[in-house]
Image (cartoon, rainbow, N blue to C red; front, side):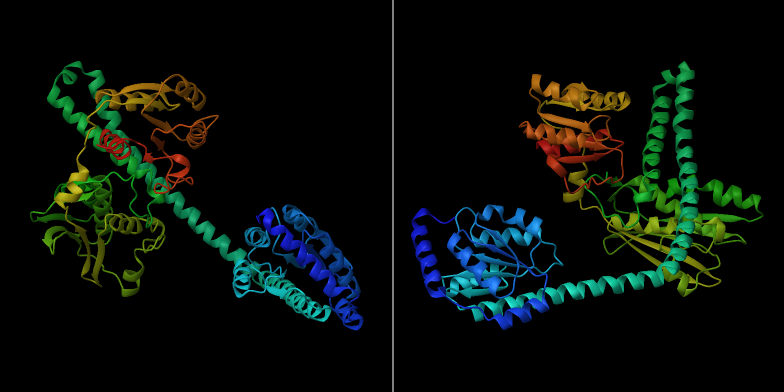
Length: 561
């Protein structure tokens, strides 16, 4: 905004402008030609000097323009642009409230990127710096006062010609796009329908597989918990009960991975991923045992004999998710079994090479052509016909990439296939330290918000077991009331809650002045809540189900050591 001291200079500029144009005639013939070229041209004058505005309107009328609007208070510029929709803005620079530079900067934000709205700047300041600033701010052309009507006419004519040429080209592009769209619509519709049907079929089959795997995981949870609940003697046997609980815990973690499959394709590692020290050989042995009904029992029922050989060397620990890596090994073993219609041997081989843990799954099956080998990691690509969804290997690729590893494939027709996975060894000073379930060395006053009683109970037991004091709320409104009564060191809230979501709660609390760290829990795999975005005042996002290890790590992350 110019200072009051600069306004007298502005007035002198107005007087000079009036004196230089007093009695100036307009080029009527040129005005008629311009009017013929652009009969509907609309010009908007933005200038706080009423005398300037009056003279400019007079000159433009004589040039043949009838569609003229004026703004003498620059703060009204954008409302007038919205109502009038000009083809050209004639703008003064030195104005109170919003000067010409500020008007152009805001104009660049509100005008669509594909819209060309020329701005002709009129200024008495002929310095090179002013010209540079005006053009940098968004001016299309600049005319220095005083000027004659012929020069003004020429500048306006050129800018309007560019404006209407742009509109004409834009209209032609729209017509061309409509014609192209009309010509290709039938083909696209047919292709889209076919693709949609195929993907729906594939997703349906994948959903069936997810249900199958999820039910298998739940079988361990339900079965072992039934045994413990119905047999008091077995429940009293601490060693047996602990073993059953360990199996149930592993099954529960695996189940949580199963239901997240739909988001697994090529997803990068997120801060919410629970990675820990993993013994890859142990994962391999578990996968071999878990898949035995497939490669042994089912194969024998089909008249095939498949043998499993484990060739394992001592491996360094890796940093990863054991459930995901078991899923990788399981998928590769299943594929190897399917690739041997006449039976054969599946070899699971592990070794250390170049500071990496290497895991190979080899079969003696039919092998793959080069074309199939090149495409086998693509989603929905399958050579199994109706028996396959084309999703298993793509998820293998996504999981290994997320573990910062690589997938190599060797295959020979008639001799078999080897999938080779290379995973980085655990860096003890880095990853290992980050893997420890560190606990805070002080007690926190925590507000826990979740509408699900089971979740509240588990998280509350985690926290109180580590010495923290916990106050619970069943919805966002109750949580807001709690914060008015008590000062909390930390807020942990669910996202999907009736009435007000967790993010809405966070926004409300931040607007009320809440400064404490906030952790958002969610069971959704996405939903616009990017784990690295930490949106709207959220300090950290935890994906459900939440383990004690993950909760402890999260507290250290947001509170500090």
